[in-house]
Picture (tube, helix red, strand yellow):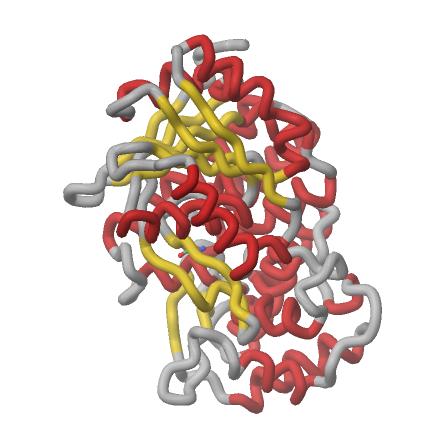
Length: 374
Ligand code: GLY
């Protein structure tokens, strides 16, 4: 495969800087890419059964070719893995592998595996290094970069975790070919988010090129992943622990988390689908509050619809709570401070900001109208 489609980005955190390498065929080079980080030729791979069936042979062959021994833990695929039982199992497995401080854990999979294995690496022996090899579009553009690791608690999603930056992120854009269309589009919800929150020219590029990207155009895939990671890397470098700007990455997420909770974190709504609907609602709310022109939400929805994304509450199968019920679910979000909901709103496409100055009546109005169309 063409080596010209290669990009390297740097997440320039003092003392913990790392590269994000992007391009088709990187999985076959994983051994050579990881070797310089090893103190002894041995890694522990945490993956899931779906990714293992599709891609583990390629990763292991590459490690073998570089003389790197490897042991593998393949967890069940799916969000329910991201909890205490599989986390305990992973930590105990890593200890049984006699992972040392200087060793590397490889997180090989989507967001669930990256978050869980990254968190295990953060706590085993008070912290060992890890490499992210994300295999879904969502993980490639969001969860594998930036060092948020963790698991879900019975009380809610991602409530237990740590900031623990990887030593390297290897993004093989060719593995996206094995994703279902639904999973690809769910990941695209996070790609479009970057244009909406801070880069109107990127959103314009997506309007022109995202259909080709979804159809498999590799140069377009590499560019979209690179631009997304570049934006995330910049934000994370400036605000690693989300004291300010990093919250912009949560555009669409306040609505999304309420919808995910309402649908039981089930197949009824994938996270990236909730982000897509959430972005549409955040722009609608922004327009109603007079912050941006009505053309902005219309343009956002038109693009999401053109891509075949979920955009409206009507796109979620089955019943939903009423507007007050959804607002109540929002109030349980991590982003509630002193009882005030924090929203990411926009002055226009590419111009998002964080605010707690959102009248509940306005939010209820947006939700009531969205539910009326369901
Ligand atoms: N996914 C949001 C963040 O990494 O901050």
